[in-house]
Amino acid sequence: MDVQVRSGDSIWYYSQLFNVPLKFIIDSNPGVNPSQLQIGQTIRIPAYRSEPYTIEAGDTFWKIASDRRIAMDSLALLNQTVNPQQLPIGAMIQIPSRVTERIVNGNQNYDSTVLQFDLDGLLQLYPFVRTETIGNSVMGKDLIELQIGKGTKVVHWNGSFHANEWITTAVIMQFLNDYLLALTNKETIRGLDVNPYYDQVTLSIVPMVDPDGVDLVVDGPPAGPFGDLALEINKGNTDFSGWKANIRGVDLNNQYPANWEIEQERKPKEPSPRDFPGYEPLTEPEAIAMAELAQARQFNKMLAFHTQGEVIYWGYEGLEPPESLVIVNEFERVSGYQPIKNVYSFAGYKDWFIQVYRKPGFTVELGRGVNPLPLSQFDEIYQETIGIFLASLYM
Image (cartoon, helix red, strand yellow):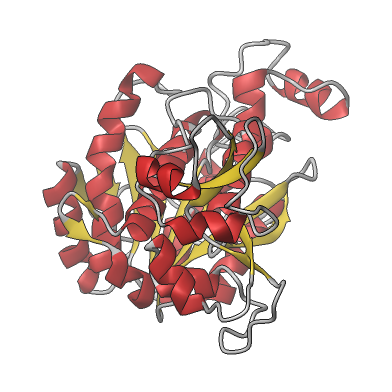
């Protein structure tokens, strides 16, 4: 919600007027000097939207504010051209409305269009969330990273490395919405006050690593050469539910130089709906973008969300630090998911991250069944995963 500065206004006053922590208003207005506000300057107030209201007989600013339990000066601030002593019946004013409910519904077929819609909504309501385009998919779709918080500890989450595991994006986005609601409304999540983590942690999120592949699984092949290629790789089958790869048949989580040669030897030798590691490591733009992001951000901890199995893989060739065991044990406690240190699988993002940075990296396999997991599991998966999200912040 935007407001225009009046004489005598301050960022601190807006914080008190709307009961929003000062830091979120400051961070929602990065180009503004909080100590030198200019009359008429636009300030963004997070966690609020303005709603139109039509004046009825007997209405006054005091009555409207009292009925809605809001400060009367918030009405004056949003309606500076309105004379509160003269409210004609039928006239339109704006009323500040605090957002206290989710706008993200993860329990739906979650393709890149739904993701963009939800991102636009969240960024409008919570402008302190920072975004960066870290690269583009094969088809040119933006690969978006979100950053929340300003702590020195950098925690990274990602979803949808595999196309038919798109439910991971939906889970991440719904929790992100809940996290933002808790921050701005001074609420807890499962009894945990999350506000301190905004100052302690910088949260880096890439909710959808493979948008082309997700759209292929959810919506079917696109018109044009990329859709034609996918149909050819899929041997003419229009059912893409088993497709894990990117749009040109490369498994993005087999693309990293961490014993990649083992995967090359035992996996498909040409583009395939799943498991083809490419003709060499790091050929695909999505995989390259994620490698460059890790280098740029220097994550302290990395969680890659996949499906399925209700397990957490946390080791790689003995290169993981001792703290990884402590962290994964906490993940197990809060989720019930089984920790597995080693598995005969290589060239994944988690493997490469541990190998290069020697920091805690985890592959979290959500749910049970055959991918893509049915939406009937969404609520259960979400409840199981909340504890992992929270523990990644405080561990």
